[in-house]
Image 1 (cartoon, rainbow, N blue to C red):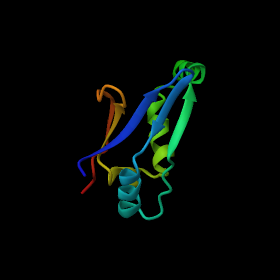
Image 2 (cartoon, rainbow, N blue to C red):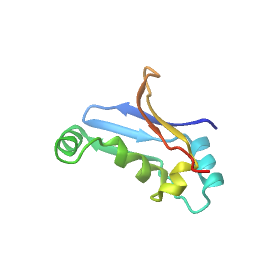
Image 3 (tube, rainbow, N blue to C red):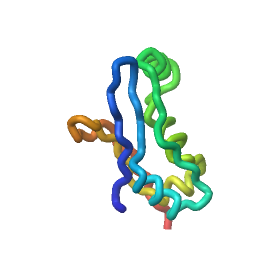
Image 4 (cartoon, rainbow, N blue to C red):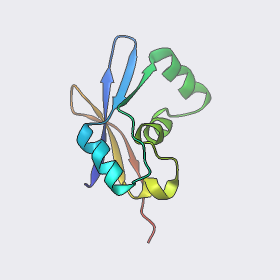
Length: 100
């Protein structure tokens, strides 16, 4: 798998970030101690305040959603893309270069 996709669904009161079951299985195969979540919901107000005070929300969402917190594990996954569920448009991309 070259690119790991995180689906982003805009809802009435916020955003839902989710993984397909096949992606969760892939993560578990690549990193056995990972505990990927089905989805994470973030309200509009929370996202807005987070980005004002801390930075880009996506940089904190994907480790939590994937159930991984070590850089060495994240490097195994390569490119992570946040995809708009309705349009298929890439909203945000994270690249982890695997160290050889």
